Image (tube, rainbow, N blue to C red; front, top):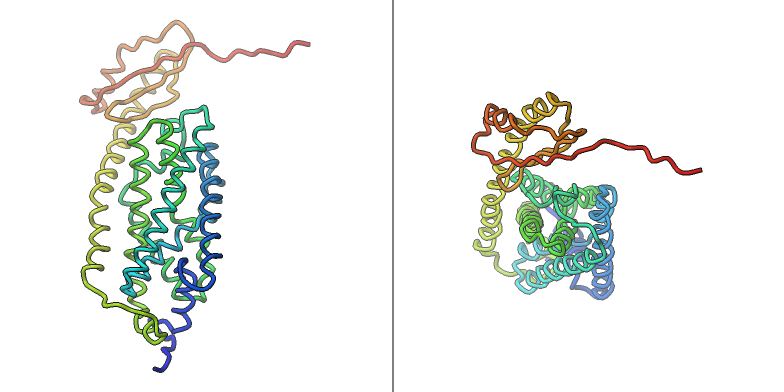
Length: 336
């Protein structure tokens, strides 16, 4: 059978051979080296991500994204779906699930070394990953397209580091482990939803791109075992994206509500505090309660009037809690 040559909108047999060598970690004569590299990078990326989250360091978390190897078996799953090879699908999904479970376990153990409570209220890295929204699904879909496109087009493979940074795989799993250790299962569930969203979006868009570039005919020309592609597999992949859109839509609505409440509460609270010589240091809205922290000198500020101002701002049905922090700064010079 003549080899399929690459052309516009299709891949060559050499492209398919390259893709299979990179994405199918469990296959090939060098599979031991690929598997050992995968698990070493999983451990190292988890340590980096956990340290970055605990230190609230964005730069460190980005480093973990670049090192993380989970993108490989995820795109490998998409390729296996296109090839309609159930054995490869199960192997690659097993790699994804096993890798994810390892990250959560290692992060949990690392969390045991911290005396601080690692939750969204005290850590910006965690807060950014426990409330996924529809915009996260959109970003994951676009990232999946770029990742698959970079695989079928060897001339743009230099974009893969950017893809690794754009998609969040190991960091949300690290957040799952850290928040579970801190006793915040609801936040852990949110981070796990973000990871699941990213995985599902990459598999769905990767499958579409690989089909669009006619990977199947090139694989057949390469004498690769290709099964019958059933419509149910494609429907399942795309249907999973739509199912995930439901909780993400709910999350987007909740975030929008929080932003509206905070936008209305901030001016009212600041006006109330300034009228008595105090200042507002923090305003948050979680679990249906508006939490306000006010700082100032003694005597204690009078909280009367704050409820009325909040009601006038359109927050009649919102419960509020005010925390008053007395005292100011004091200089404690060193003794000679």
